[in-house]
Length: 346
Image (cartoon, rainbow, N blue to C red; front, side, top):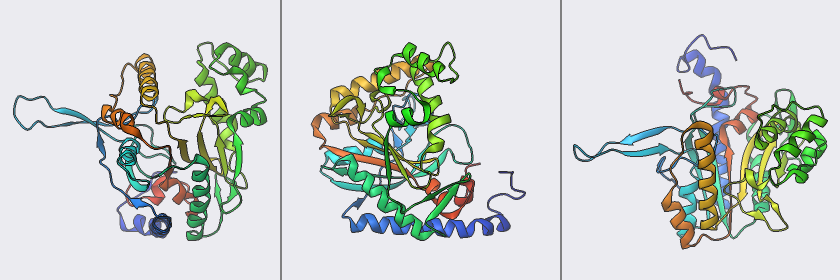
């Protein structure tokens, strides 16, 4: 998108975006009503956290809380990249069905579908499978579609009917269908075998590629563009190494209870059957922060209060985060995320 001739707050610019913004507000109102009708409690959790996340590649914003007395050292805090840790603490405290429209912050690229500050719709169900979240997604897509111009949406030329039955495909099936590679044969992370299979199929592989480098390149270039064509797609059963906060699938410990929702090739949501084992969760956190240190020379702190909550006992639960701005783009026909924001980050 070309840079606008006027700032986002300028009357002409704002009036151009106003129809999209009103549809966005209507969509959020309808979705909020849906959750209330399902017996959910709407919650609000702090944006400032001890740890922003534990993702290896995600960047975050850090701030310092000024000390109460001169001479004391200020406390380091982070703007959250998701309200996940805080909301799970509420599950431990006895909440069973909760949702939140949360402003979240990720320090990185600004593109047609990314902003450093954006809105996530995040919700959790105690005592529910992650398949229930898939049903929730289907219902929310119908709610959103009813607020837009049509149930048929488009992103970069790819059409999708929001109220069509969800397609469900595993990550292994997607690699077989779109790349001709048996992914399960290179799990756990057998880099040499994976590289050989990718080269055999004609895909580019660098000499210093790690297993996940190959995985993400094939995902981004060859698989994601094919998801959500005609109808929404649920891509599920990610390799266990790509699901730090989700539990292993009981029937196959090589994969996890994780899925992503795609519409018109655009990722909209990321859901988990939640890991509740505090010891295993700590080990995963530490391993990922070791890798972050190796790759980027830094690590995020680990939220000890979150691990203590898990030790206290979190019920078997499922949770998911959905990108509100991206969904608004789809139902309004906007081609840039700034077109569905009252004011973008500048």
